[in-house]
Image (tube, rainbow, N blue to C red):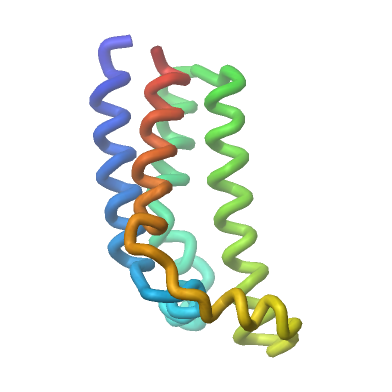
Length: 129
C-alpha cells in the first residue's frame, strides 16, 4: 500500500503529541494532567487522544481490518478506558488501595511515555503492508 508510510508517520506524530501532553515523572502526574481535561469535559479528554481517531480513520479509509489492526484498536481502546477508570478511582471516588497508591508514586523513566510512539506506528505499518 502506497499510503502505509504516510499513515505511519501521521500516527507517529499523533502519539508524540499524546506523549507530550501526558509527560510527567510519575503515573499520578500523568493521571492528574489527564484529569484536568476530564474535569473540563469528557469530550475534551477524548479529543486529546488523537491516535485513536487516526487509527479509526485509517481502518475506514483503507478497509484493512486484519489481526494486527484489531490488536492495535483493542490496545488503544483499553488504554483510554483504563485511564478513565484510574482517574475515576483516584480523583473522583478516592478509593485507592495502598499498593496502587504506592505504584502511582513510582518515578517513570522518560522513555516510558514514548512507548506508544514506538509501538503503535510499527504495529500500524505491519498491519498495512
